[in-house]
Length: 284
View 1: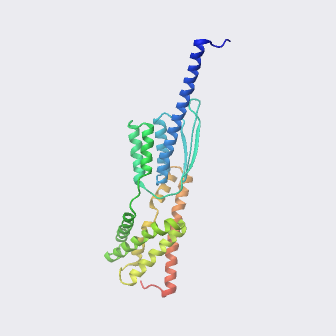
View 2 (view 1 turned 30 degrees about the horizontal axis):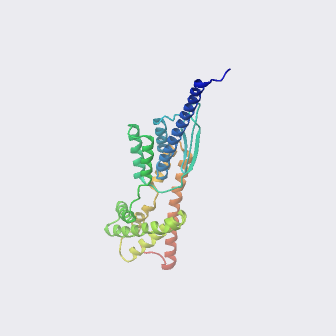
View 3 (view 1 turned 180 degrees about the vertical axis):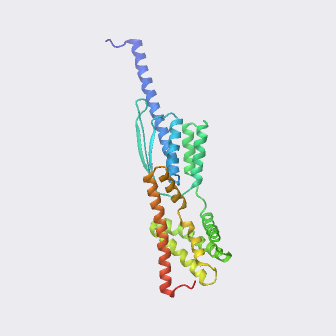
């Protein structure tokens, strides 16, 4: 078979080059879509979203921008994504996501963004920029978080049956507790030691308030004050993941929450044992 010559050869080479450029552009766009979907999943998982929400958001982004072969396998601290078929380029990536706190404002922002995306408001580049902005959203001020801890402790104390003096003591203990969490436990201690220390700190504070007449029901004061340490969202999401069939992730989250409960109980028990040894017991 004769090779094309002259003008025909030029057209043939141009056609090959255009075809190659088109495939390369298509693969680059598919890669950008996958990385953007991974970024959305990363933000959701890192900030306390359940597994099913992460997978659903990933699928929404891939399907909306035309990547039909995108798949994600999500665990409680990692995302595995793949794509590839006869019509689409192959892509795979694994990203470790360390266990972090719960920031539902970021989760809500990604949810809203995914719905606006389906209305056609964003190109893939604009979506990625919006996700980067959500990821960079500042946390609440430390003073605000400390105040919220104190108010929450007082509210839970009231809910469990404490009177006004008990609420005031719980407010004080809650303020001190979250200062400890932000400035000592979080930056310098492991999660286990930090929660044991938090449980012990609350017990000492509430006991001393009780002994000096600043509060009437020690049990309500302690229960209310330790509530900021309780991982309620993680525990609830663990149950939901198990109910959705995500047994591995659900079990990990449940175990993590139960470990926190156990550490808090150890801290409270250690504090009471120490107080009993030093003071011969606490008159209740």
